[in-house]
Length: 337
Image 1: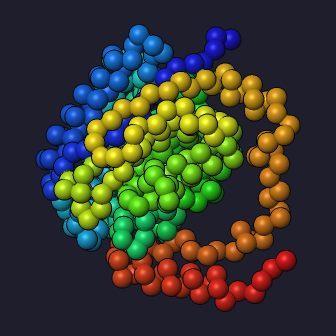
Image 2: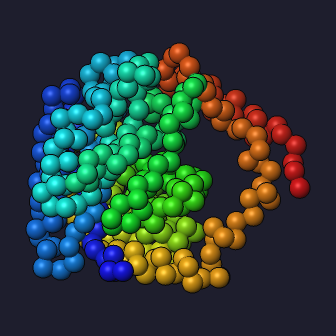
Image 3: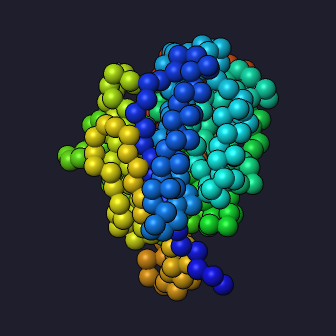
């Protein structure tokens, strides 16, 4: 079998956030240009076959309520922008993990999702909807919280360049989403993120770097992490530290953009053949094989229960209420041995 080895590009952006759907076109066009740059610029080296873009690269939740977002910025998927990415993927034979869209879905018309797509020459492979919104601020909904939601929460695409899964920003602070993606077969874990200061890529609180490396080594997976590089002027009230990076399956940083705002593209090799060899060969540090699932009784009960948004959309105030209720469940329960 021919080895599967190529380069991945983590692309960070610094463009103004749209106020209406019509403005999204401008951002899409810039990201398409960045794909051209990455693929052609690095062509004398390894071929770039996988590209990832940050959270909120198409639109950020600048309005404070879900109805406002649905009215002014949310779009269905597929749409005119995903069609352009499909054409670009066909042109170069690449796979694109898009920046996130604020998504509306006719089946769940009372909520807005924060959604990224994996797109290849074949079309859209999957939609991933953020499972852990950054509450209480984010008022887009987790699919976990919707009564009757029955689509896969953690899809993995078995592509010609390896098995690819993604999770969005705050999802990564929890080990469980990435562990589930790895259990579902993911070999490359993509982080689509808008991770703000001070939890960025520099000491003393470089959560960005620590979490990316940890998720790679604990799942024996590559990590391709694209972070928002927007200035405070473009995406207030936060500044965005960039630091986009690629990490190998032992937690080694293969490449990282210098921390700081601005458009940047960082490229590093992905060797799927080597990863598969290591997963088959290893007896030590094979964390999925060593996982003693029955040892953790905490997972037998809910903390932040599902099905909370059956007929209403999240708000900041309702998010706070649910967080407080979950805290009481955590703090008031008896200790288990």
